[in-house]
Amino acid sequence: DESDILSLSLDDADADSPSIPCLACRGATLAATSMEERLSLTTTSLVVGALLVDGVTEGDIEMGLRNSRHARTLTALFRARQVLLLPGQNQNQNKQTLLLGVMGQVDDDDNSSNNHNLTKILQTEVEAIFDATAVELTGKMPVFKDMYDVVVLSVQSSQQAEQAINSASR
Image (cartoon, rainbow, N blue to C red; front, side, top):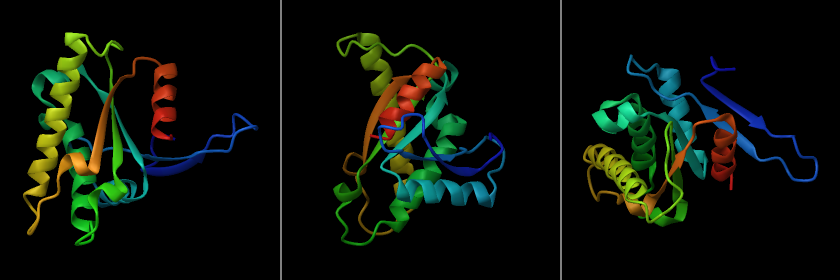
């Protein structure tokens, strides 16, 4: 249900393979984010191994991800992990994969200049959001690359969305 802020589902489609739980959390909007939404984002950021942020549009990329609703979602996710990271805890110990679902073409060819530029732009934008959030901390600043791996995916169809979710659950 799209109105749910946080939900847990199990995919029982294949009886031969074990179900992989999927925690779905509605992201922030450009309007005010409710306390329930902030708590859901916090919970999600602390318990999952991979995060899928979908719905990144060409407009989001052109205007800068930091000026989009995704920046609010990423800020909430990053803030929770940065604040609750235990002092002295190895940041690599709980490294997460951050999957960015782009509603447009992302070339599969790693040598494509278009793919490289888009991926690099998004990685730079996400890291800048992380760094801006980390400035709020006192003490040692966390390092983005120690806490996250970023993967940029094309999500233009329900099949690609399903593949992105399967990637996140591995």
